[in-house]
Length: 329
Image (tube, rainbow, N blue to C red; front, side, top):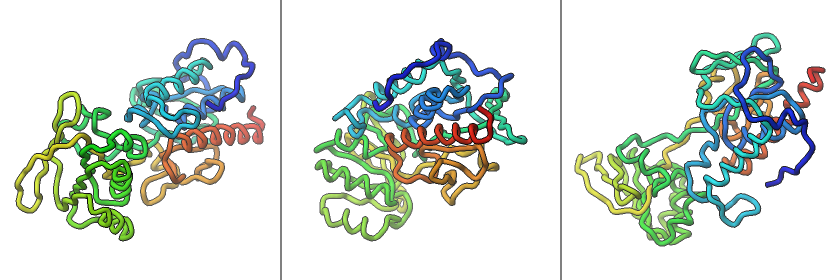
């Protein structure tokens, strides 16, 4: 990792504790993925009085098995990587509210108020929103049970592990077609299943997939069940025109039917784009002064771990500069 060691006030090295609702923090970080954890490290380096509010640590990193594009490692277990992020953050003794969902963020004067699902209210002079995105789910039997056991949501992360295997891709848009091309590169036997009648991907992408000559494309079909006990073994597919069902044997399923930004707590506060992502500038500043955002919840392109971590660091440094310029630090 690229965080150098440095001297730190020993008070910051105490065991992490709960944030104090009676304190107005310099910074509250909302979220627990790579962007949030990177922001926490950089904010701690600046001796900011900060706290973290998150449902859990790791974010989407924990939904995959191996990561092969983290600098310095040819391959690293995703859980180990997320655990190392969490251990690094916890070494600073930063107060953490774990297991609570953020329900609302408001700005009152120069102070932000953050509500959680247990009605606790926290206060801060700045906010970094790094709540990420959630996968649009198939919502079928077997999906939740087989995540990480053959069911995946990230071809960039997991395609290499399906070399030469049978794989089903659910979706009909650009992300689904890109996933198919990633899988074709590792010689997977791919079946593409589209719920809506007619493919939605851009023409050039559709042409590239068709030119492979190896991809089976099933239009106007619905995956109604994912089968398997310890790993994916097959899917049940319904023809939406004839209503007939058939079973397909497969070693894996990639769900590529879209992502939804976790913007619920700020959707009435900050400007969003048409996809519901939080609009940020090059300093991670949102449309609300003092409120920064980083990672997949934002308009920054290319949703990758390394990019999220970099954006988190940038957001923390921007929040620090904001407080210094306002003589609040």
